Length: 378
Image (cartoon, rainbow, N blue to C red; front, side, top):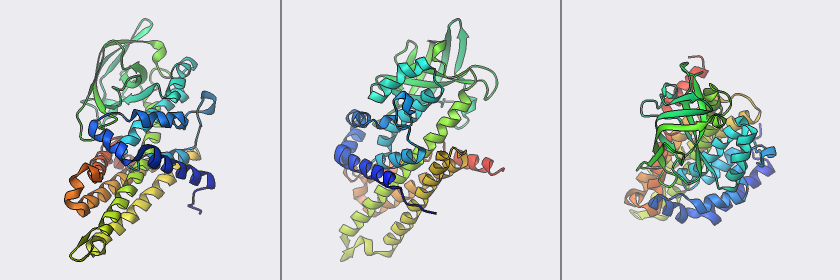
């Protein structure tokens, strides 16, 4: 079995890493994390290169890359920040809902603007009373003539407040626990939509929100697929989301480890480099093993998806393991850098904050383990 990238994959990875260093950089990401501003300039650069269309079919103007190329992309753009990666990925994997399940009118209305970088997408699943139990949501969607009327309260919807954003809302259109869920497209400036950005420890530049829907009336033409298709569509959505998240955790963990190695090699205490102390170099060696193992899990899952095989278990395995690795690597980095780890200009505190969020966002680690167990027949 050959674990090497093909020439095309290697060139793609090198192109992305060069872009992140030359066109984005640490200082830019740090600035937007501290100011809590969306990285619009970098997002536009990605759009200008056509990369937003990685998952969009060619007939709709996209690149139609396979899941392996997508994983390479997510790993590279997360090297300095998981939040920056999420700022790009959130619209990308949400756009696949429209590309694959939308009507011709929906694709014509939204996809060209998305590919240009003018239209962003967000997906809203979680509610105050329905987090891990996503099917327990209560936001209602009631047919009324030529429209649907939505009422409810959503929370932790990342990027929903950004200008030009269309929210893909999962709402209850019938009594069946799963079959009664539907996806509907709701522009964030639509009458009755109240979006409030939350002051969270992470998601600072992308931002996450609470949404209040009060008698929101949208045309029936905003429905994705048929009424009751929502749960199935979200399942497909989450497979790509979790692959992208797991790949991004690997990319950021690699940077956290590289930063730790660089710091401990360059700092001298008790007359010798910190990296020469067994307690620290063994931690770094262990993290190196874990990062490589997480990376192999990611690309194993991506390869299975590229073969169009079901990979629910594999993406959950990759996500839960990579999240744990990102957290342990950044935690050890915090210990190694000591007081300097607390300073934003050393970046490690951002890696640490964002790695902790990785254990919750996109499906908690506990839920991922439950999915894995279910796929094992337990």
